[in-house]
Image (cartoon, rainbow, N blue to C red):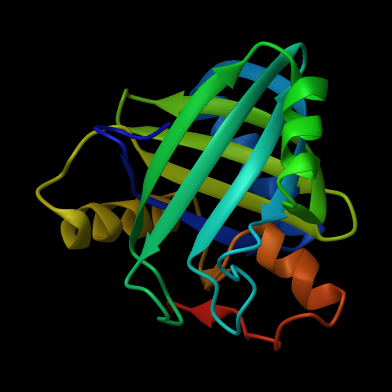
Length: 198
């Protein structure tokens, strides 16, 4: 959920044990919002290659129950190992099948599909917390800022501090999103190590 089309979040890589322990803590302190099964298909346009060593753009069709969303994200800084935020433009689509046919007609190629089960919580209207079990990838937690804490850098600092308050001692950030991890798993991009914040 981007604020003014800009999204600031962190994605943490968790073991199953961490996922269960942090999940219990989140359920105690945060307000439950919803659960959902999500399928995201990622595409590459013919005129520009999104697949590179450090991708910074994604175009996806996101399926959320009976809802379909067309999403474009552009991460900053471009070509950096760790990105700080992204432009996020989304719109709901009435007919997913028609959109997929349009994509095929103009030669947009499907790259990967990400399937996940997500539990969403909100903490004090400051942070949205998503506990994700991602098929073929494992366990993750996303924490997204719901307010501007005084710029991107300060907002990221607040996100990391909140993660530490949840009891995560060694914060392992996935430097890229789930689509990148799926491409990495398929050997289509180079392996990137998780970034440890301490």
